[in-house]
Length: 202
Image (cartoon, rainbow, N blue to C red; front, side, top):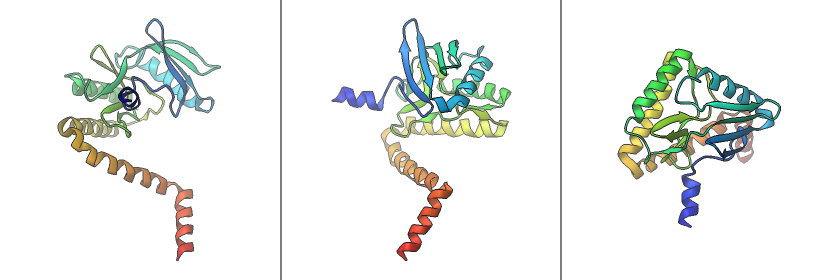
């Protein structure tokens, strides 16, 4: 039972995702990803950024790809990062990556404390004490200020959970519920339905 819970809360990698139909480790230090058919844009963006940053250490090496099936085979970049496995120089590594992103005007999004378990860092892996950004599909154009703020916010949240450990959960989960509700309300359809429901109850 303990092993099952640990596998759920601390997976070494996610074998599916919002963009990914299937992901798996393969032999010879390779990692396979197949994108969902309607996520062609994420597939193309991932290929572009893997090529753009191919000289950098913090993204997987592109080995093979298949445009027809939206498949990518890259280098295996280790397991998902956790608070427990943070390297001593993790903040320095993130700041170095941030500088390269500013140079390229690329904002790497959708990384940081996992909503379900904030002791796991989503979409960043670690191998041989080196951090890797493994999900590039949500990256977008960003100016210096936007990239700086985004990275500082993520670094701050990691530092907070390092400092406060389980006490951080008292802040994390209520905040995630609030954000979830806010996002629902920001969608026009949901807001209209809520207003209609309210008017019916009056």
